[in-house]
Amino acid sequence: MKVVIVGSGIGGLACAVACAQESLEVTILERAPQLVPVGAGIQVPPNAARVARYLGILPKLLEKGVALDGIHYRRYANGKMLFDRPNVKTDEQYGAPWLVIHRADYIDALYQAAIAAGVELQFGAEVDHVDFERTEVRLKTGETMSADVIVGADGLWSTSRDRLLGFPSPPVETGDLAYRGTFTKAQLEALNDLEVNKLCSKKVVTAWLGPSKHAVFYPLKGGQQFNLVLLRPDNLPIGARQEQGEVDEMQATFEEWDERLRRIISCLSAASKWKLCHHEELRTWTRGSVALLGDACHPTLPYQAQGAAMAVEDGAVLGKLLGLFKKSIHLRSEVKHPVAEILRLYESLRKARTTLNVKGAIASQYWYHLPDGPEQEARDAELETAKWCNDTKWNLTSVDYQNDLLGFDVIKDCEGAFETWRQKRDNSDGRQFTAET
Ligand SMILES: Cc1cc2nc3c(=O)[nH]c(=O)nc-3n(C[C@H](O)[C@H](O)[C@H](O)COP(=O)(O)OP(=O)(O)OC[C@H]3O[C@@H](n4cnc5c(N)ncnc54)[C@H](O)[C@@H]3O)c2cc1C
Image: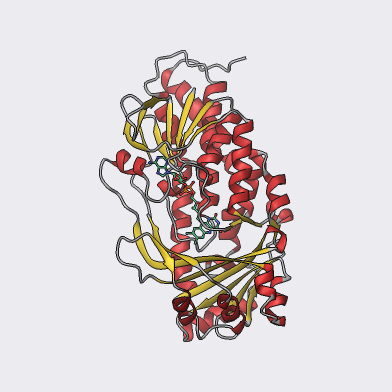
């Protein structure tokens, strides 16, 4: 079985490794001339770390990343701690750590695993058309490539998505944008600020919450680098995707905020400015033997640190389902489009979970950005006394929500679903599907 994956982002690479682990033949077509991680840092929450273990790259991520001791939510104006998230040392609770890592290291770990597993990666290969009848992609150069399965892992501005739906389907603007910047430890130390140094000495993510904005800061590369993301109302022109960020604007935007954050921002010489877009729920992710994954089908606000986590889950589930299909099913009867059925099964497993995540991130946008007033005071009071119990309306402190988000075993889930599908096919055909020996 041959799988062609369009895009070598985190989702495409994870899918490639998962497929290759199942002895499928995999080619990735990537339009960039080389691997290009966008942005610097990324959080790898426990559900993504569990997938990393499944793909065999968790030791590498642990070696290159920083396993967190905590996530600290702070008030914007004075930096007062609102909530020290208690379940971050998650090995015991969720069977996997919560990491932060440089994207280049994450991508490299996936890339090395893909190459070691025999994946072919073609750079400078931009796909501009998908033929659903022939299960074939066409490159900008005019070259075509056919496969048994095509996976559109081509991100937020996906061409595969437009082709699959049959009309342009740009993601929807969320009203927010993100500045992304990094610092070296030396840059921050040069501030000579005890409070900033204290912040930098911890293996924590610090998130400041304020009216219509928030900021996120964490270490990378064993604490030798730091990552800052500033989120604020979007003032980019409609349709613009990215611009060079203006440091003056960043400073002015966070003028009233915690002194430490302002000092950190003062070290920035440059930062990129990104429009944040999403799709709340795409009508369909599959057509024939073509399926979408990751940001191509469920782009989200990054307010639960789950976009790439959901993309690697997609990739792992798709690889596993295709592997189960190839390995354990010997199709004796005449099943029309069996791969299309497997892809629909994939969509049915993944859509509810990823849609919940997109909606969860929208809820966080509201909740993180509350203006000062009674509702914000109620939120802060709840955070300060949060005992990690069920009776809360906020996703962040809802144990059920968090257990499901971080603890759900997607591989076990898809194995069970596959078995149910197999039995249903047996019954509906009145014939046997037997395991290959
Ligand atoms: C500010 C910010 C912070 C974030 N923080 C986190 C976080 O902490 N944790 C987390 O899990 N997620 C986070 N995310 C989300 C995460 O970055 C994305 O969800 C994730 O990178 C999506 O991966 P992907 O592989 O689906 O798409 P992409 O990474 O966009 O990869 C798509 C690939 O396809 C290629 N491509 C596109 N079109 C074509 C074509 N026509 N032909 C061939 N190749 C093509 C592109 O060059 C690219 O390499 C954050 C996002 C933002 C904006």
